[in-house]
Image 1: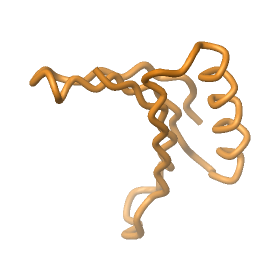
Image 2: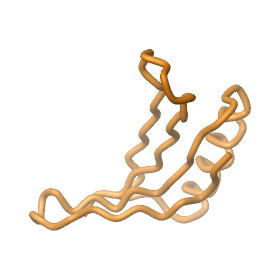
Image 3: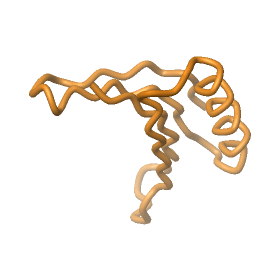
Image 4: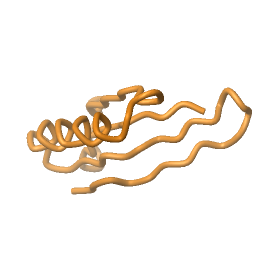
Length: 74
């Protein structure tokens, strides 16, 4: 399993541009460092009107479905 922090810009419907997407592999990080990275993503997200920050638990290597934990939505 891999663990990613993700910040995804949510664009209004009808826009054709590519939304911003940031993914950080935190698989081997300790909790304090993950919490710090989440705070950095929250700070960065202030430039977006709408966004989602999530923790992505990726099981592709094990041929299983992924799951996500939503941290913040605006």
